Each structure stands twice: as C-alpha cells, then as structure tokens.
Amino acid sequence: MARVCGVLGKKKDHLFYKSWADNARAEFTEEYVSPSGRLVSDTQTAYSLAICFKLLNKDQLSRAGSRLAEIVRRNAFRIGTGFAGTPFVCEALTLTGHSNVAYSMLLNEKCPSWLYAISMGATTTWERWDSMLPDGSINPGEMTSFNHYAYGAIAKFMVERLAGLQRLEAGWKRSRVQPVVGGDFTWASASHLTPYGRVSSSWKLEGDEAGKQVIRVDIEVPPSTTMEVVLPGENGTQKIEVVGSGRWSFTADFEKQGEWPVKEIKFILAKIVEDFQREEELKAQAPNGIET
Image (cartoon, rainbow, N blue to C red):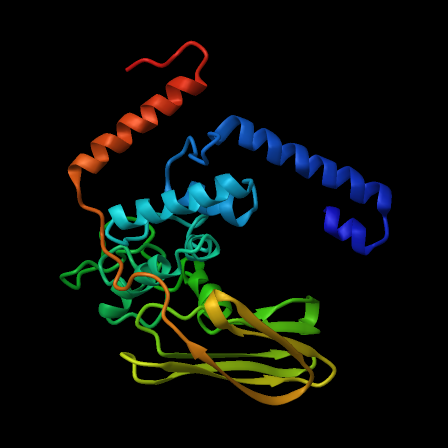
C-alpha cells in the first residue's frame, strides 16, 4: 500500500502505510526473533518468509539464512514447506548466500521433492508431494489432484535465478539478467513475451571444468526497453552494463563458488548441542524462565 500510494502521489497516505509497515516489522522481530536471528518457529517456512519479506536486520538475516540452510541439510534436502513457504524457500537460500543448498533441493529426487514427481512420470504439478506412491499406486488420502499449481511456484525461481531473467519495472520496461550459476547446471535459458516484445536470456559455461571456464550470456532486449547485465568480475566482484534493444552477447571468466555437492548433516551429537543452545536462548528471552 505504501508503494501504491507513492506511485499515485498520495504522500500523506504513503507515509501512513510506510509507518504502519515499519511498526509491524519491528513488532514481529521483537516477538518472534532472537537477537541472533533465530526464529521462535524453527522451520523452513518461517525462515523463508521472514527472509523474503525483509523482516530481519542485516545481522539477523545472515544468521537466519545459515539456520535455514542447516535445517534443509538436516532434512536431506527434502522440502519441508507447504503452499505458503514453497514459493520462497529456494529464493531465501539464494538471497542469503546458500544457492548451492537451493540447487540441492531442486535436484533432489527423494519425496517430498519436485523431481520425485518427475521420476514417477509426472508431466504436471501435483497437489501433494506424494499423490502417487513409490509403488505407482494412487495415495488413498485426500488432496490427490494431479494438476495443482501451488508447488509449481519453483518456476519463478528457475526463471529469475537459474536463468537469471528478472523484471525490474512494471511491464518489463527495465529488466535484468543475472544468472546464479551453481549445482550441476552448465546452461539455462528463459524468455517472456512482454508488452514491448520478446525478452530472453541464455547462458552457458564454456571450457574445461577442471581448468579455466568462461560464462557466455546471450540476451534479447525488446524495443523501447533496457536491460541491466550483471556478470562475474575479478575477486568476487560484479561487472554491470546497461544495454538497449537488440541482441547482445557477453562473456566473462567464471570460477565456481561454494561447496558442491553439498553434504547432508547427519550427526546426532550436533542435534543435541543445537537443542541445548536453543533452550538457553529461550530461557534468556523468557523473564520467568521456561519449564524443561
């Protein structure tokens, strides 16, 4: 509402709704977030929503992202979200520097996962992760639709992060290409028909994986629009160039970042230590202590 009022030039309403949003964010943090960024609801969905809806400060954001990645790894990269959290979990991981954990979820074939359904022959998105059981029989429970979009929300992540094609302004007047390269992926492409025409991005890794690699990015920018091209630079920096309509090609040296494949966390002792630390945090926040 604050943004809408700003666009409409309603300054008084803009300030009112912005203040309301700021207060709501502060109250959420005070009630549900520890100073270190630990959430009262220690789940994939809770962290994903808090990260993507910008409810945390910088220090809390880093801690929350690390904790989300840890939960996902402890869950063997299985999806632990429902309709509310699934559209945001991979995005939240990527925003906090854990894109390879996100790709581990995306490529996982163990149920619940996106590729489990595909491994069972699915050509549509199911209503529940296990609408079809591993033996090929239909799940006898309820909610067994075989054409239900909600979990297909991962498509947004694949277009905007994997292929790197992002809308910066309504109607695609301005766009960006910024692929997040990781996992086993060596190429990706995406396109969209905008009011101005077709916009597209395509990238591919070239060269020997054991030696020097180059990323090649090809884009198509429709008339009367601009695109921001973000490529890897030296020493972890980024090179940014803005171009107008037409077809463009760019190359840049590429060096893989982060651990791959990402390992699961299986240590029972680590779980005991984690539970103890969480209990101590809750004790510190509760004025009269907690029952144990």
